[in-house]
Figure 1 (tube, rainbow, N blue to C red):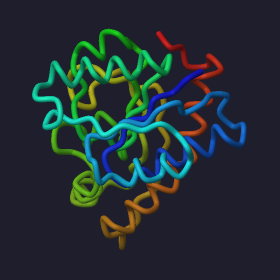
Figure 2: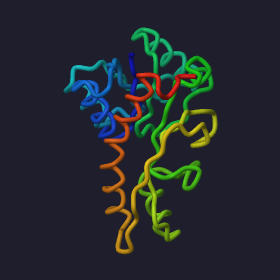
Figure 3: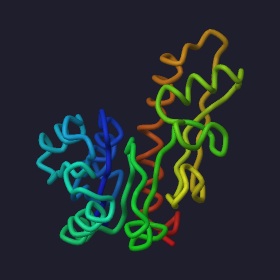
Figure 4: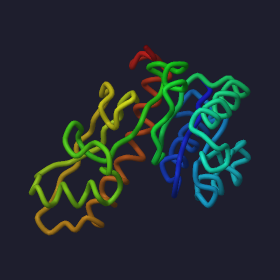
Length: 197
């Protein structure tokens, strides 16, 4: 199976996916990486791994429609079967969601439907979890639709929240589990345990 990974910043989830494919835990290949941020570490990581990568943004192409058309051309070029959003900070255009219906997945650092929606990403999520005095948080992988964090949940895993946690400490604990969980769930998708719709 051919995977496209979209990422905006550090790319540590991307690295976990690449490593999982390389060592055989995921029976698939990351064929292309796309980032809306030309300074993204995800582009640096994919360069280092010899994976084709593209900086693609509205600023570069002039409109959401033009950007979506170029993204679809790239995905078609690499015969992509599945898209994984790994810290991608933009909503995908409806034309991409329709073409890859049920084949676009996102990872979220909390137990959706709690702590999801516009603006709920990164440290904002962990800060909100602590402020709400939650005893547990976790990681959610869900299908992507036209509304932030509201697509069908395909898998979740729980992570404890401790009394003396700061958002930074909690973020590190969640990210550590996130990397393992990503590999487990993508493997389940690739082998058909989680259907591609």
